[in-house]
Image 1: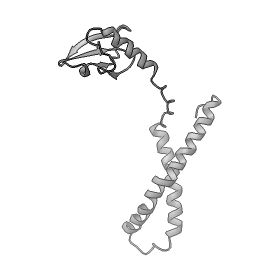
Image 2: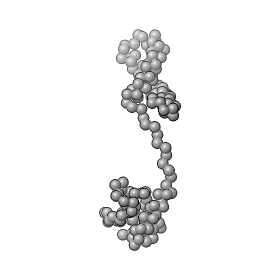
Image 3: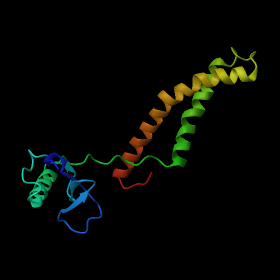
Image 4: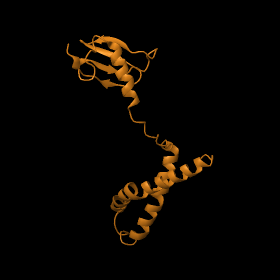
Amino acid sequence: MTMSEVTATTEPNEPNDLATPIATAGRNTLTAPAAQNTLTAAHAPNALAAPHALTALTALSALNTPAAAPAKPAAPSVHRRAILTWIAVYPTITLIQSLLGTHVAGYPLPVRTLLLTVLVAPLVVYLVLPAVMKAHAKVVRGTAGRGISA
């Protein structure tokens, strides 16, 4: 076994804070709750002889990891998304129907529906709904800061 085959992995259910060497699939694996790193001979020249060296390296590398990004706010519930989608779709359909009403009145219903959906779907998906969702997120952020549930 070469030194490059020594790896450190994280097991979330580790009962203590000390690293425990485990032999798996022909290589030494070191479990440590702090971080997950791949160690090579350059990182730990005496890794096989001194597993505590791997523990120290793992602990030090955990100190050098960047802080996690702030959590994104949760997506709206299915019911709220349905209402937001309706808020985007209804005025768009009404607007397109009022603009095309007299021009497509002589076409059969399936053709009018096809024309309406070809225009409305991209408008809603790429323009209107993102704007509605952005406005909703702004309202939720504003009310969350004041302790009001939206």
